[in-house]
Length: 194
Image (cartoon, rainbow, N blue to C red):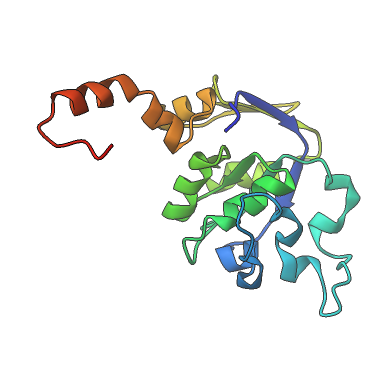
């Protein structure tokens, strides 16, 4: 997992509440065996019509947002089933920050495990960012979101901040304890399987 420090990007506004994981990546696309390749299925049923033609009225089909790394959306984002594929699709599409008033718990946790920074903010601040036209900067170290005219501070658990800053997925976190694990195994009365 890559380390996360700072992102400077325009905002992609998705002003919808209760966006569930099946809307983020529909179940028929969960057949891939790796984490990459899901971006093309992101919000598939909203991006394409029944003939698989892009819908001109959906925000992600507007080329202005092609390189946006920041998604700003409504309350309860990532609800529904606990599929990690939803986070993979957002990341594969290019998003590294998601800002919303609230997130579903499992989705929120999956973001950190995959290098995406989810930022819960009060609704009024989210509404301000939904209408932000200029690029903004999200700085994880300072815990700030800076626009051309104002700055917003955000809270984050210190452990979650550390794993993003250092780019540590679950395996990398475990490997940091390799010496202690080896010492425990050496001193343990449990027979080794090797």
